[in-house]
Length: 352
Image (cartoon, rainbow, N blue to C red):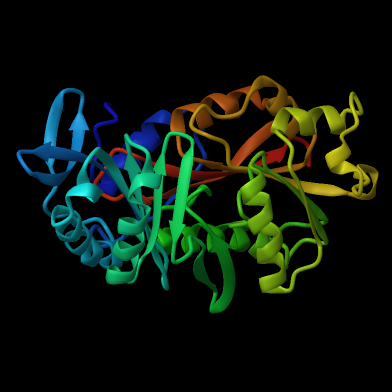
């Protein structure tokens, strides 16, 4: 079956076929609304005559975007306003090649990407931000200008409890807030029946999963390579009054070396790994999945929570993690009416 999928039912059928070797696994699924769900949108800019248009490209084929129904209401409202304002200002639209929108329940920011020195249009950008009352970020090679701030406030409602976050467009963001909340709720539900001590988390970002999970584990060690993400994660701990999380700016490979005592890291100077008793590990890797070293790392722990944006690499990794059994699998339709599939798998060490 091709990955040119659209409906949730097609995605469920694909996952059942892909994981047919795991005979006794029941696959749960969580649907999203099919319109007005996406909190992030990125467009190329197409120049024709003296006007610019939102566009997307599929190879050499160009699509002019007039309506973007999957974007949430904040982005849909901002799109024509931003485009009209840019079209009325020659300096701002000249050599503009892309625009990115990022929104939360409370905020929105707009990033303009240029093939020219943005210092030359600094005043125009400032007026643009004031006129539209928007957070505007402008970027060109080696340069970045910010107007009206770039930090966004977000609130997640998890089982009627609110969690608070700060982040910017430099962070990795879950693109569907409703489904993001459902993913966290599903993990928390699965954890209710498990014995829990400490959690080790890889690829933690700004603490999206970390913060809610900190209230059900004794302690958490969470790692991430991005310095900016770690800065926001520490702020988000303060916002939520959680004090049992240690964040470390380490790659998954570096963490593996630290745990195996192959190398010490200054970034772990205030963390004694021997103080932790990890009952669970959570991983949320990029599309390529887990490297061989990280596969060997996760095998050490009794329970694995694997968040995946690529079912194929998820399946390959699960087969490589031969020390564990796949216990639960859930599909989250984070990108409704597209071919993309988000999954979470729960694995348990054999013999436990």
